[in-house]
Image (tube, rainbow, N blue to C red; front, side, top):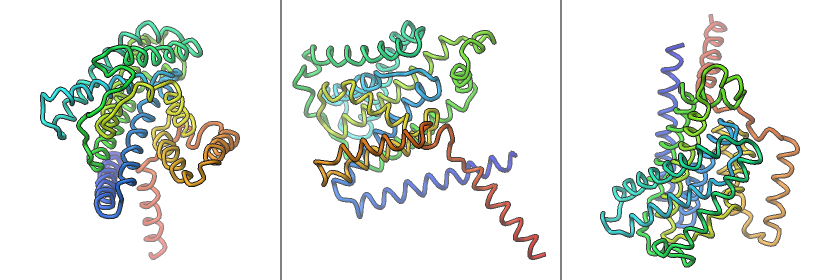
Length: 326
């Protein structure tokens, strides 16, 4: 078993490096500016969907205020970038992203402690209201640019860097959710009363997952701010939160792989249908309806892409061939 685990880590690392090198080469030689912008948008949506999957899929709580945390991260990183404390570049981006994460986590803890005592529809309404309050407050204050938005944010056009940040973000979230702390969160999803009876501090575990989700929503917000260079609070309304929720539900609640596949599909497909602008949303909506009818559990349910299964299949086939030759 240890040998298989070691082989899985090595094979996963090789796959990730190969993917990164391949996308970097394509983005710098073949892709046009439009394709690179689409690649960054895919990265942002993947981070958002995987982060929301932590709360909705792993914790089992409906969360409709994800765009609110993204806006906090976007504005925190954007204001830091505009302050001129550091020269624009990757260093300034990373420092701004850390500040954005801290802001989002503090707000998530403040909101999460009272809100996560509720369940189901009540929690969904509270998180929806929270997202709208954040949007209204951003439009109210002058230092955020008010209703006119925040402009002239130093841009960072570096698709390979955004891709690397996306891979690191997914790795961190997946590692946390498969650790001891993550299994506590999964236990609450399966049966909160039984978990509480076993001595698990359910409130603490819920707030932990909620804060982790908000943290990476802020990372996506920072990516968005530096990629677009301009922000408007209207972009982060409840419609945006629902779109991210659709990505998670469509991919399969609880599946990181499903959230990634769904986020890529729901970002790329509307762009491919842009030529058919009159029928684009009809085709898009019909596709969602059909998938939900025939796959109500989502595209992947709770299944994950596992490198260990590929290695086991290959080694079993090789072993069978050796026996046949003998």
